[in-house]
Image 1 (cartoon, rainbow, N blue to C red):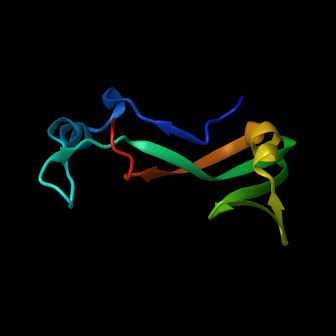
Image 2 (cartoon, rainbow, N blue to C red):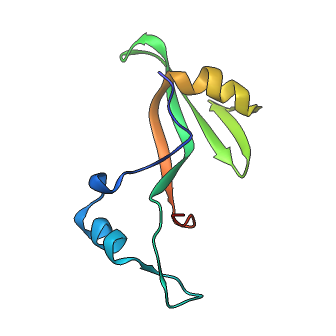
Length: 107
């Protein structure tokens, strides 16, 4: 299964607090006009389990630092090309970590 590097929640999946803010608009610091924001999430790290079962195998992490993806495998840290992550590593993800981006207005 392939996982997205970014995604946007639909309004119906938001908490009541976020849905109310979405409905009423967000205040933009540069204008008085409310600005609606996407609730977009960006992948920044994931963990992979390599092994035949949860009781046996090996875990390693892949994390993004700025625009560079790094593989942390015990004491070895190596850079990974983005294409490799999308085609190979991300498909094996066990746990994914996303952060919320607030700076993308709905157009």
